[in-house]
Image 1: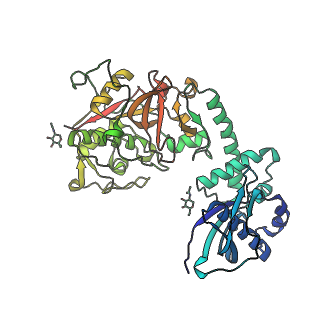
Image 2: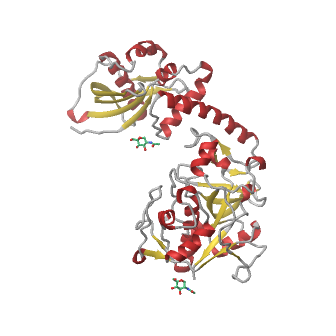
Image 3: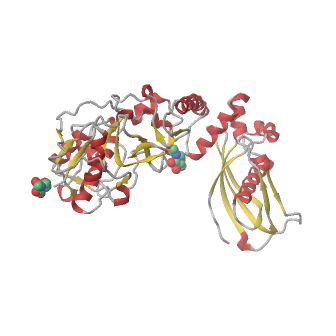
Length: 452
Ligand SMILES: *[C@@H]1O[C@H](CO)[C@@H](O)[C@H](O)[C@H]1NC(C)=O
Ligand SMILES: *[C@@H]1O[C@H](CO)[C@@H](O)[C@H](O)[C@H]1NC(C)=O
């Protein structure tokens, strides 16, 4: 017998069943047989509707049911299903708030026949009864659409809230954020689309506190201002129309800083990775954790500046690789070891606060570390962001990122920026921002290490 285990997350919305469930799902009680079967049947229906199997599966038995008592609405169950000889012709129509009512499966008029043993599968289903949730939280009917968006959000981002109160609190924040998203969208000058991201259950203040904890100021020891000519960077009018260091192998994969304000370390390693690649023809993914732990000029998860970090990399003798000194998203004791260091830098520079000159530097010298105002990025989905200035003041730098390229789309010039919030965010972890108007302070703090 082949046994498969997969997780299905089910959103069961059934006003017909709700009355029955309400009584049965009070926190102290368990399900009765009929309710177990109803839930398992929903899971089988979903499996049939979504799988590419030609033959229909039927529920054989419910093997175990566990519900999360804290919320009273999350159900984990294990069940066995068997494949019948009937072909299925699924007819499915979805409505955002009425998913399961509309699943119909046709083509199995014959009585149920148990078929060969190898067509038995055990399945695991994690189910959330959203109707039950909605009722138990007294969510008003006018809130049904945001509520269902919220349920999809929980599902998509695998959120684990510990109790009903937290769910309700998060829903309130989520609803307020939907209004903020609408406002960003209405005031957008670029082509950016704002929407629900993994940060949609945080108030802007909470988001700022966790991810943008640090107001960027002047570095403790200022960096030398680059003289582009002296650095051999020719500032020309005829720069390529588009340029992208990812196509030249100078950029590592998108990383994820987690719940730690270490963006500055990611911005720094991104730049050093590029500089090392260009000088030594080798791309090495570098350790942010070393900077979080060992950089004494900066504040680890509470923030920092690339300009300071370069100095500290020189003091520490270089950076270890990501593999040698892996990322933990929290401050630990410094354990850098000289023999494990992979790369060094010799110097660092502040680049001219001028997007045209930054463009020349980028093409000829590599990706640039920058500070930026990232406030609107909480809700960025894709496109070229160009927010209203009052939503993104250029002197309010609060986030470190890496410019890796530029281009133009629909007559809108843009920078391509590597972020450190994972690949799920933005355009596979990147975003594009309008180029040429110092949008969100993009030209306020460009810096680079020098490897010679
Ligand atoms: C929620 O819990 C699951 C299982 O323990 C875990 O894999 C997942 O990362 C958690 N989600 C979040 C957002 O922490
Ligand atoms: C750059 O730094 C490395 C390591 O400290 C050193 O070996 C190298 O000689 C330096 N290069 C120059 C040109 O100073």
